Picture (spheres, rainbow, N blue to C red):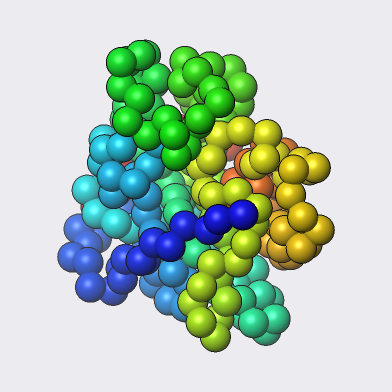
Length: 221
Ligand SMILES: C[C@@H](N)C(=O)N[C@H](C)C(=O)O
Ligand SMILES: [Zn+2]
């Protein structure tokens, strides 16, 4: 199975607006060892364009969730892995962009890569994208693992944001090694209080999230 050979951004070189609401942090300042490849800032995502609300390739997270994730990172580093973060806090305007994109039936630019067997209009009801996303509450994250020694991605059996059954955590479409790699990530996340998502091996939400009812809309900048 393929892994995406993408180059992560280096958040320490990005100019930050430093105007986050209290209770939020830039994740690279808490976990500098992680790789940050913020897909919705780039054109390499299922929409094929930069997503509304992403003004910089940064991961923003609630302070509570960032502290828990730091422990995940420390645990996995001892085992030879670092985290690669694809998305953390996601503004509601980004989610609204996803909804508009799904309704534009003529735009199939990224179909082959991200949702080859599915009709984009069904991605919400199939559970691959949410109209009210945990990401907008600030304590949900999309991430994978990379080898600490080489920086190379660990093989999880399907690429990030590939919408199909092969991305279900419990799919039988992947090898035992790929299952073991998913389990490594999942167990480390669960140990620190994150809940996995059965339909996407990369998506986790802090169970004791500090803003369980608030959907934020400040920009990633
Ligand atoms: C779009 C994907 N990365 C994701 O996060 N999906 C979940 C269901 C969400 O939108 O909250
Ligand atoms: Zn997610």
